[in-house]
Length: 75
Image (cartoon, rainbow, N blue to C red; front, side, top):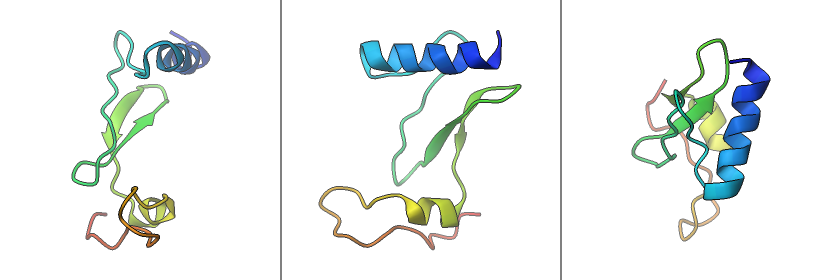
């Protein structure tokens, strides 16, 4: 399957169901305990996100104040 078809399929599944998973591509939701990111490439997959700099740019979770996350020793 071409990369653009994987990306488009994930968006369509997400729009219909709220879950971008599709055959051969399982989505795992992001949590603070298990940060995940869906990566589209030659091998597309949901991967552990171990990038403190990137995670620090994400908005704080609701109810957690305005401080950015990061510095958790991942990476």
